[in-house]
Image 1 (cartoon, helix red, strand yellow):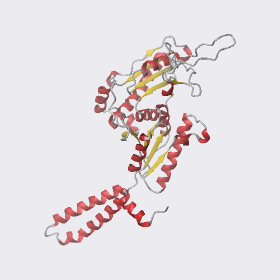
Image 2 (image 1 turned 90 degrees about the horizontal axis):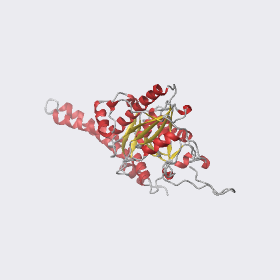
Image 3 (image 1 turned 180 degrees about the vertical axis):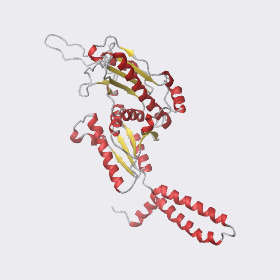
Image 4 (image 1 turned 30 degrees about the vertical axis):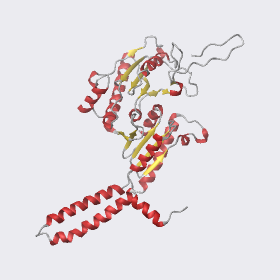
Length: 386
């Protein structure tokens, strides 16, 4: 049913834009009305009218702030959220903070129920964002983009890498803290400042929350002596910035053997090299290096996330250079095993846009699952597939 004109008018008056229009109109009228009195009373007591004028000008600025265009909010819920609380919180926050909200549901990334590659999926996301930004820009509005992501770290890495190919007035990432899954807070801003030298305050923050202080140089390299020569040029860069202490042992074992199951009990590590075949082995690495946070959760602030993302990239560059010199390989192929807050993962992908690096996928649904039993063969019972 179509809403009446007075209902639509009342709805406008209650909105952010309506309040802004009222403030601009009222403040402007009062400010302009004060000018004649200010001139008349100039030699008497102009201070009172002067204060009114300044106050009303501030009200006009406040009203303009409320009605101005505030960029595009992009909600990307491509990770299961059974109760829908996190997605609803992100959509509500985006509508509150931005002039336009784009929700990229997972079904949009599977046209015709066809599974796309990670690069193709993120390319589609970027194209949808570009289309909305261009629509906003044609109206003369701000083309800044703020992401509200809910995705696996693997997808987050590829999203950051893809968005680094485009140019936005600003590109920010919001975050849902682990302790409060309904309050959206600023994560970080993606920009050239992430490549700048670390400030003293950032170094102090990293020293307090990482196991390896920034002044200690590049992370230590641990070689795999049994690695075949044809795979020695590969380096595993293992990053644990979330409270998942077991991931380091699993990532080290997978990087050494290329096998996705643990050698002892044959349970799955969750790491996948071939999406269509989660049991398929990958290529081993000649060495690994670890960047690890303290066991407790990192401070979930913009300052911390930006400092850690910038330092992670510096460690990556230093470790790659060190392994190139040690292994004698001109082209080091880095395998990235990462467990980190999503904004940091997106920033790492954004920073590594031109680097030779492969993010290793991790599926929680496979973690700790038993090895499948092969079907019995005519010659006798089959064995375990590891």
